[in-house]
Amino acid sequence: MLAGCGLLPVVAVAQQPVAALAASDRAWVSTGGAIPEQCLSAVLVLEIDGREVTGPAAEFDLAPGRHALNGRARVNTTHCPVARDDRELTVPDLEADFEAGLTYHVALDHSATDRAEWALVIWKIEPRPGEWPEAPR
Image 1 (tube, rainbow, N blue to C red):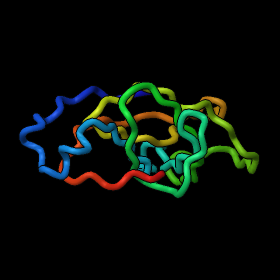
Image 2: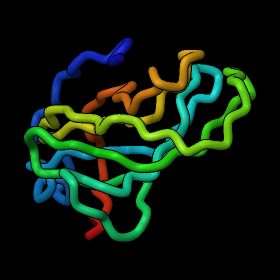
Image 3: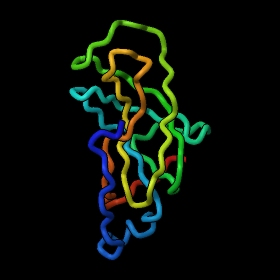
């Protein structure tokens, strides 16, 4: 499910801007980047480690370590048609180990024709550049 994902080298802390130094001990999650042609839909994370989160955020930080994410997605079927079904679908939590200094791009993979195979995935991992946004609480 992590097709094309590999851990990328982290930029040395000494080369990061001063604003990034305070947050370099955090992992970042980005959920707003949908790629409809690859059957990846943006996700609104509603729970982290079984706890509800407040306020929608397309990007947020996490302490490094193992975490479970879950939420909702609006599926774009333009490139990946599926049988019409208005029933809500529950997918398992995305459980992964998150490393400090990296951004994890998360989406709903709905490429399977069987909706039971749809899953939250990390589709890209990259070093965290530049400014660090404030984390939602």
